[in-house]
Image (tube, rainbow, N blue to C red):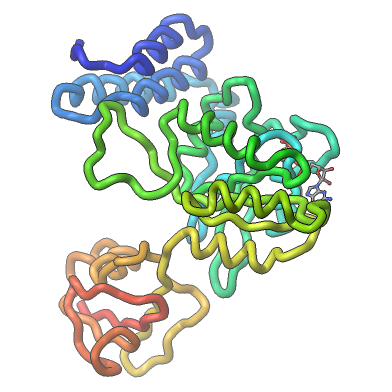
Length: 325
Ligand SMILES: Nc1nc2c(ncn2[C@@H]2O[C@H](COP(=O)(O)OP(=O)(O)OP(=O)(O)O)[C@@H](O)[C@H]2O)c(=O)[nH]1
Ligand SMILES: [Mg+2]
């Protein structure tokens, strides 16, 4: 065994040995994988863990397999955002107000016990929001952490009537324990175990009850440099601001395609990460297109409308491309 495994790994391995059910075992193995340092010395061990996870997953009976699948929500739309936070802050209300999903909303804490996805329409795209259980004193369930780790961004929801700075501080500490941090990864990661950096937005909810906005100002003053902070009322105030902020957080661009002589389809854009190239766009249309692409004409970020560009051309939001294979 490589000598430089972290205390987190050792702890996860210990839980693995004590785990009783197959689902618990899988959870522990996933945890071991996620906290293991990534370098040559651990390649074998990583492969070994993946094989174990695959074997255990295959051995699940149908009902348990369905449960496992439903706990890892499949990504759809332009991005997946996990809605997280302490109990009773309005996470479910936010998902209910922005999407057609209807997770239970109630005046008491710990209402939500499973994850519920919903699609939020923004202009001509759909963004997936996932309502999750509260992150409180209890250690989060393995699948809850999995959703947070896999998400393209996090919505951290705190309650402006309940000392939001303290709530945010506790929430960030909980994430940090699991090696999840907000913002961009540093250029030279200096730590042994991998840290998962996440795009995020801090929401001060229940703004309708924040008299004079003092709580929000405190929250923004404390965390505004780390990540955008906005005030909303999930029951209906500034929800358009929230939608736009969620879109911006994803940092994506929308690209449209057209056929020679045809009109572009402006309803169903290709979604790319900012900085995406023509080649990335072609691959997302079809992987063969990525291989066979000769050139494209472009309207938007090209020097002239309809000019020919090559694979490595960096696209801009709103570009229209005509692919030639
Ligand atoms: N006044 C006001 N009440 C809100 C707002 N958002 C949510 N609430 C209320 O706050 C309570 C909790 O809302 P939920 O959406 O269930 O909160 P949650 O964060 O999902 O709670 P858990 O699932 O228990 O973690 C409910 O009584 C909501 O009606 C808001 O913007 N303003
Ligand atoms: Mg809830």
